Image 1 (cartoon, rainbow, N blue to C red):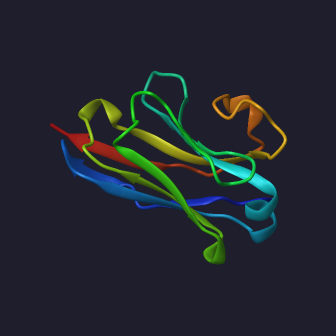
Image 2 (cartoon, rainbow, N blue to C red):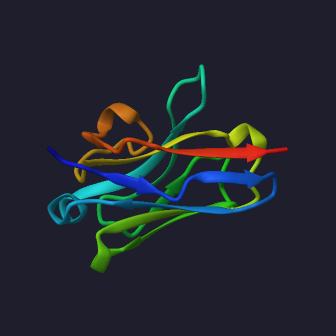
Length: 125
């Protein structure tokens, strides 16, 4: 069973920062494209950020552009999500996910085959 393991969630004040990490098995990290989603209580899971299939181009939801940064450390098979200027409405469970590199729609959750268990981010006002 493929395991994506997120960490780094916690409590932040509005305007603060957190960095999430997601460790993946080497085979998955090298053959799948990685992304981040989030799900707030009572809401649909939504796209946050992702890499292209080649792992070079990055994509972001409009709501996080300029504040969040997705990055990767290939030596550690780890992808990160640096979140700055956090807002209370961004309180959610944040998920790491992996999709086949050939898929076109990085923002669609049904394109992703593997998911982590999620890490809670709570932003206080």
